[in-house]
Length: 500
Image 1: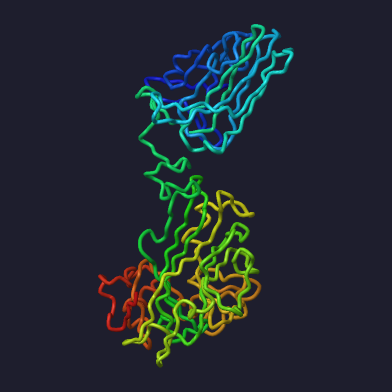
Image 2: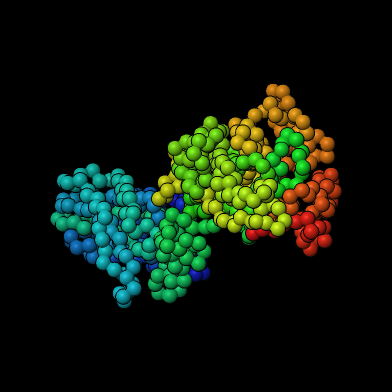
């Protein structure tokens, strides 16, 4: 069964989607050149014919007049304006007998030329199919395939197919034409190029929708949070609760997943602002994207790692011996927030200062380079979300001491012997894992707040600054969901610092 593509009441249906790829298809089944002309196809000495001598499939095929010239402008088919995509032009062709002579099909492209009266530049030949010589046994259709030249992908062009030859009286039939590309003609304006859509980089995404209009390998930003920064806060004495001030490490973050026109991740950009380190420990900070294979990553840039680090790394910059993508943003907080001394505990937590300037750290995790994915295959946007974003603190240069958000999994390098000890409530035994909540009160050791908020001054329990926090925890989040908001009235500002 063949597809019939034609216009009813001015509705353009001249391109279809095949196997998830935009294609322009023409199989002659409308039976009339006029219908295809309305779709912006053009023909020279070619008709839609049901003649048995050149019929290839279905009820109609395109059939040329007698091919008796080597000029490419004598007998031809010309497509509408399209934005070609990667792939191959394919069709079936057949001669209508065994008459003598030479016959060939020339496949050319015509670039858009704004200075030309009809917008057409000079045609360029990129493929030629020659029928066997001498011409014998031509009753069976022949499959022809021509790869789209890389130079024209995503840029407005027409495909120009010419039928040439000398000697004899043979005609040529053509059917089942498929051209990878996005329809780009305007049938309401004389089939001129559709100028309402601009795509400077030719990636198939209109400039108005393209965050990177001049980069064919990038198209969209997909950040979380959608605006501004979120705040991570850690208590570093796990599995003990400690002083519970949540200022041992305070990191603001924003994660941007840059995708290309295919919806595949090119890179993940983690913007980090480490605001406070209210501890005597030299803590590190890592991010696991749970469930994502390390082989998908090509490289990591922007991490801050000191000499003699406790961590080991692969050639692509990920931490070694991990099951999932694991990035160590810094292995010592003083790499990004140096201690100023002068008798203070930690950095940026003592009222009255001195205070260290907060700087932006940008960590870039590359999944595709120049359009090519890592050895593990492409990563989709759904592969990396806030749901599998798994940040963690590494306490006091001890790799096995990982502190995660509640119910987030430890990495494969965590020390399971710590699970369920002291204040940690955990499953133990063969299925040993921590849910990173305390035995009494279900208190967490880490918080992920959906916006940028102040943190506690040194020496103050977290509940002194955020008055409804404990009630929120005890209710499993059903009460005081706005416990951290300034407008809620549940903050004690005198106990808080807000160093930016």
